Image 1 (cartoon, helix red, strand yellow):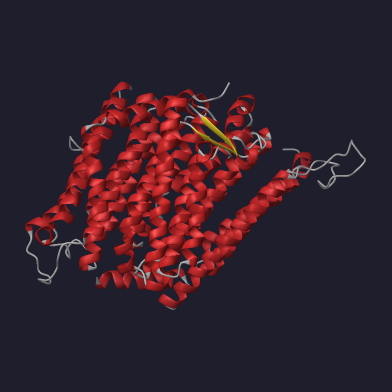
Image 2: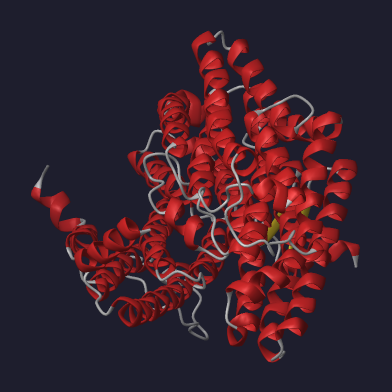
Length: 126
Length: 492
């Protein structure tokens, strides 16, 4: 793999790095709030993927320039899609955090291993 | 009016949902939910009739012509799935009244119906749309409302189950968005019919293959294919009974539909089977899912969890049909979508009746219940026989076509495995029957049969189980047409 390829595709490397960081937090952390944060980072990396791929080299922001016909615009569609996906991401985060609050009320903890221990104990008494 | 049916299919339940919140009283919200879900079923049936007569319907939203605008595209395949989803929605809604009043606190009941209708409209939206990004939006509408519905369960473990489902479901949905994004990069289109034309030119690119991989993992998470099923058993066990009956019969079915739609219509059967070897990847997973999950189900003591594991096994049968890569195999898959919705719906609704009266679905708590709640347990037995695949039930029709598909490919061992795993289903259903009919009733003498508001919808599904088991001609015909449409594809 040449250095050129590495540099010219740097946006994808950023995306992959963020995605793996988010995924790692999601899997390795036992704290439910940290899991939600990891999920958020994971989703944000996909937003970056979409937004960076809508960029046209030398293109202006997609705002109509009056009187000029040969303006090169960046592709606005991925941006619009990601606006929707950001809303979805916020909704997911808020549902996740709301569940974490209710789990805290019901179990007194948001640490996954402690919750598992409590559940194992209640299952044994059933 | 009839020209606008495709959009009304989604908009009616979607608009009814916020009104449920304004209606402060639970019963009023319930009435609205029943009306909206029945309207959705009427629209779905009308659409199916229209598609069977006139062929594919295309609806341009806001009159923006596809592929620029969002297109709702109805063919036999999704008209069929629309009928399944809205049919189950229409049966569970009247059932929910008594069941939810018992299991959810009064203040949250209007919220429940709002989330229920949102989930329904999300599932219908995934099914009807012809635009890939629209699929993602509706997927999240249905998933987010599903997390909320599951968290309404009585036990506190409902919360942890919903949280786990949220994490895994969101990862799955994000994988699907990555796949959609990569396809958009390669083709510049989000319209499924348009993509089917454009994709063959770029088949060889690695990006398309990576997109395929991301989509495959995302769909398999959503449809709970072994080994990505871990979110399902707890979610189904601890959700309110009406929610379990609804979700088990619709959510995973719609995920299977998404997989078929993307991999057979958008990518095309030649790409999926010849280039990506989808059939050879899915076959072992399906077989392991069927055998291992049926075995696990045998050792469960909570009957809702038993049925949940059985659901994972049944999803294996659907994927097995797909992995035959033939029209007969796909016919079996599409038939089983419908038939499994009927049988699992009936079984989980019978468990809701038991929950309503004795407050538990533990197998020991159900001892002797056959004499106390004869109609409920009879419904469970009928649904169970259908699950096993006894003749004169819908389960038999599915298994018949599945085995035909296996024999058509000359795969004798697979056909034998299908028969053997049916016996495993018999074992786990028998454990419940043994407890209910052959043990003494230790509990309270005042335990009575469930009210008719619960039994009516349950028996409606049981009756459909028997009706379509005896007169399978029409369902088989529709499923076969849908399978032919999927296998033929719409590519160049």
